[in-house]
Image (cartoon, rainbow, N blue to C red):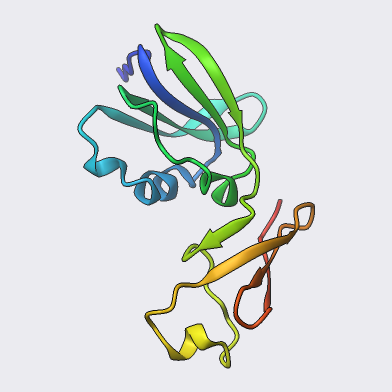
Length: 143
């Protein structure tokens, strides 16, 4: 039987699109933290059908802004004393570095490999970003 204890103090990332949990887990480097972490994949959800959940114990200070670009519908709960202290509504970040790659073959990032891929949000509703260097548009895949 699967038993995952409740988080007394930490972070719960819920409503992750099924299959995205591992990508978020790896991006946050959760395999390198000292506390216990639970990645629950394909959990039943009335609203979503299936979802992933990440529970991080004894960690409350973590940069979670980039989760919004991976799954803007995910919810982040900060837990203290086994109660939700704060709910963080994710949104697309205004600036993204090295999470999106520029596809323009003439862009400086295609030629000079050490230059970071930097994109700025230009249309939140459409999920559209533009490259800092060549202004190439990149649209996020939205469902």
